[in-house]
Length: 263
Image 1 (cartoon, rainbow, N blue to C red):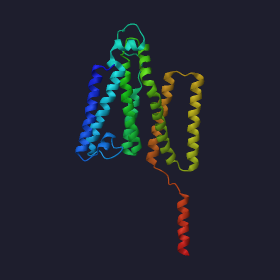
Image 2 (cartoon, helix red, strand yellow):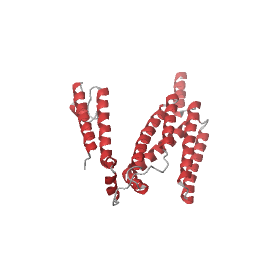
Image 3 (cartoon, rainbow, N blue to C red):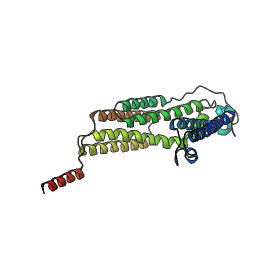
Image 4 (cartoon, rainbow, N blue to C red):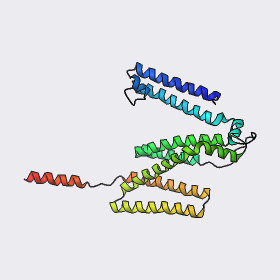
């Protein structure tokens, strides 16, 4: 069950976790706090504890990936995919879209460093997801010599996590970019109009894709255009700035205070 590399990685993760506990207790933290990663109680020196816990998480994650992928051994992958023999590995033929997605993440980081911290966080998340997806794609393309088997292996391993993760990331991009535009709109009526138009566009595009059975290249092009449009809208909205929003409660309290002062 455990491959040679996974045993080493899991051992490193265990020792890093134990080291984090020892370091936390020796720097003033509590046993419960260090065991629960700060959920209940203190952890002592935050910098050293965070570094060791981060090392433990990374090592365990890589160990689990090594177990799931059998360290890229084509014989084990062929057995897992249900084929009789290991085929010769061929160069990958399918295009990958992780490079443009990584560029989009870098653009979000640059925008976040200039105008908004929210875009900075979003860009970092996009780069982390892109690195994971790109690494798994590079591995699965060379798992066996059959591209269809490679696709099945990748789908079995990543589909339960990939679909909800990418869906949440896409929603975050749309919500964040659109929120900058809505806050920069000159009036409440303009914000409402923009929301209606964007919602109608998304719904119409989804219906068109479902009815026409568009190719993957067309859908990728439309999604790329939407991502660029959201990023451009976020840039323009952040550059314009938020409009002044009147709070009726504050106006009422000011009027009330003025009446009391006159009385």
